[in-house]
Length: 387
Image (cartoon, rainbow, N blue to C red; front, side, top):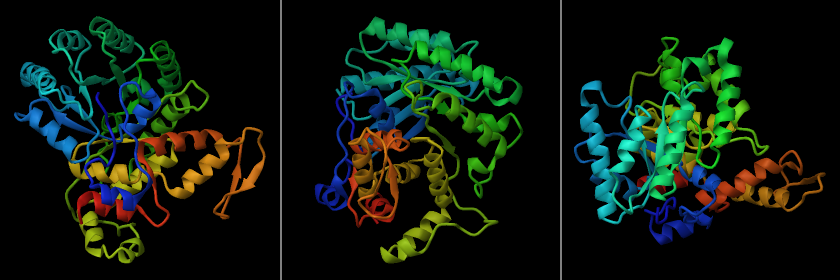
């Protein structure tokens, strides 16, 4: 990875208007936690795409910072061999072009594919690692060991992102024991594990549920319970936790709505963007906006996405406001505890309880930048989309 930065596709004058502190460029030598935050909206693309290399490059040019070439659920059984060949070819073509402008991963179907892929990669490849689906204690260590072996073999740092989505994690009678065992395995490979992903589609599938676009994943109680348990076990801020990424939002086209949109009119009227709000609502993206807000409220960073239209929304809502940034600096600068009013005089900052929050905000500020005081999410969204 030569360098990844958010909003890099926008002109300098637009960046200056939006940001008090611009997003920093991250490299392979950056803090793994910051790289994990930099995943942002991770866009999945089927390995069977005929124009895979050009798709990856186009998406990077449009602001995507992480992509996954999918060999698993997006590819049917009859096309597995062709998909594997396509993925290897794409990574090698990018190496030949000396191109590495985003974090690129391959989602494998079976652990043995890791060695097959790595053995055929060209020198100087830009592969950042592997997504490990259906990860569970009984079989997951094999996949992590394969990633570790691949990194040793190539002398190239490779990350792993396990996906939690199997019955052992989901069902109440096995969940706690399973998550404890998963945590023990992940801790043994901590240097490799970039982030833990949540497979909400598979989780819902175990109950015959496909959530409607009128609701968020947090309205599906059985799925929300699983997410809460994963964050509780694996997302702690006591040096035992990992970055947890948000589940996929499946929808991107309009439909007949049962409920009124919850997206407020005022920010869009104030920004002369009423038509833009209508476009968001017509494409069900107001539901995505709400779910991202709930992701953040539940300790989750970034999101799996399956459509380019989702990327800018995830990134816009990941930026740090000037108010958050000033609060985080005030809290991080004091280790003795106590409480003090925010510099914005609208809340109390409790220095010990809020410290972990503050440190995460400073990492997120480095990755996504700090917006100016008069900039809101509508400004970011309209700048991203060119409205």
